[in-house]
Amino acid sequence: MKIKGTGLGLMVPKKMSIGNVTFYRRQGQLVARVSDSLEKRSNTLAQFKQRQRMRHTIALWKTLKYCETMFTERGNAYQDFASIANRLPIVYVERLHMTNASFLMPGIPISDGNLLALHQELTEVDGVPAFITGLKYGERNFREKLWLYTAEQTMEGPMPRVRFHKREVSRREMTVVDGQLALVGEEFADENKGWALVRIDRDRCSPQTIVTRCTLYEQYTTDEALQSAAKSYGGLTQTPFLKPQ
Image (cartoon, rainbow, N blue to C red):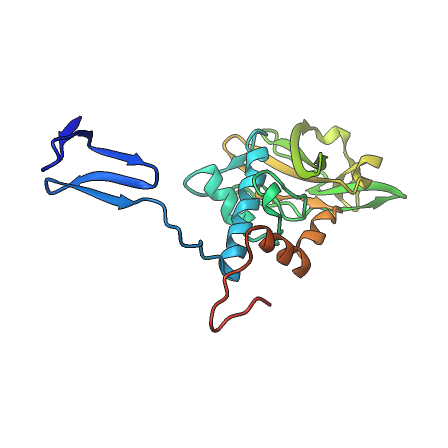
């Protein structure tokens, strides 16, 4: 709808922007307001860390959300995922790769639900790499499905990305190790991969996170990585009482 600005005799939209100036109507008067501040955005150490943490959480979710998952304990799946992923170590990424870079690390949430969580670990069985699932031999719910999620650290040009996929597994393809079921094979020695086995019973699931031997992310958690990433954003905002550690 168009309105007439008082005293100007101009027909203008109810709200419009020209350059960095926004025009709008307030109490019958046409008001102009600068819509973009020229002041440098504050980027304290605490703010930078939080932005980097949030950036990585979003980047992980961008790839995980296309792999069928279950997060059932909060308002929506992303909120549930983010509440857990925000506890992961902070990785510092330069601005050029800020949008999509993601890193494989232990603890990436794969599911969240109210079934009993399984303790899972990577080990060896008779010299062969193995993934201990935490399922007890002989304990079985015939309604229950088992989804094995695999995460893989890839390099897409200079950018690190994590890719996820899942498949259903059966107890018949597992080996018994000290009373627990395990998946055994050379693939579980791959240091660029990680795994999580999720129990699914209709609309319920177990809360599980990735176990992995991957250590690439560690070089992005150092003070050197922090300073390099911060520099690409124009540096940190200094405060009178707090300096970067």
